[in-house]
Image (cartoon, rainbow, N blue to C red; front, side):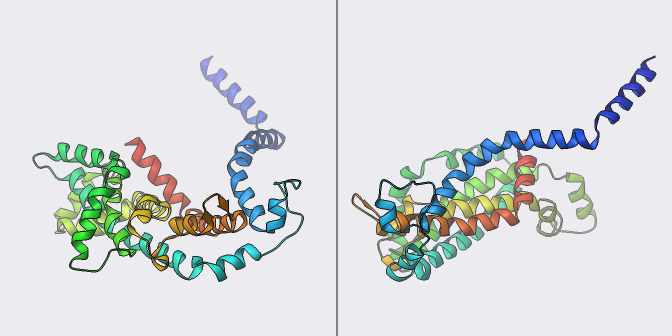
Length: 300
């Protein structure tokens, strides 16, 4: 009786999942997602539409903020001709994000692997210390970091340049990468490493040729997060850099396009939209690694 009931329910279920049923299910699912998608994309839409408005249209309160009556490129021309957005701020931000991310991920991978695999006295306390270090607010760290920059500047000129950011960003990126990858490395089967040791691989070679390829989604997730944190960082850039040619995007846009109570809304929206494009492209290409790295680390 139980077997026949199971067969009958499976037949009924297969008959219910007809093409028409699948279409209705898809319509229901995507209809439920419409409010979320609209809410998420609304700021991006406002940035996009405002960046193509003229100054007169933006300042006219009688016009609707949700669409443009005319399309103009004057805001992007202003960024190119009257600011250092494209020739300095964008390039500086890319250099800082790439170099700081490379340093932080390299050190974080080694630290996370050691904490996840090696057994030594104080390993658990050290792991907790890494996590606590990540929780310390950046607003409490920039004061001692100023002393570090001044000390380094006495030997190598780094003050008031983006190299000061490359030195200071790993202070909050390395704990973050280490804590993120510790959980991911624990998901890699230890038996695979034991097989490599039996075949004569050293621990470093095992890490590079066996563990890292298997942990690639987690490493990609750490790279994406670190790159994004560098790209959006504001406080250290504001404190350490005053030279207009050395500024990054976040501080350059803030200091040059906001002057007292005067906001250059068109150029601000154009700068914000242009600054979002590299991040959007990176996440679009590496979304699968990003999602896989998040879920695997979280499950462990």
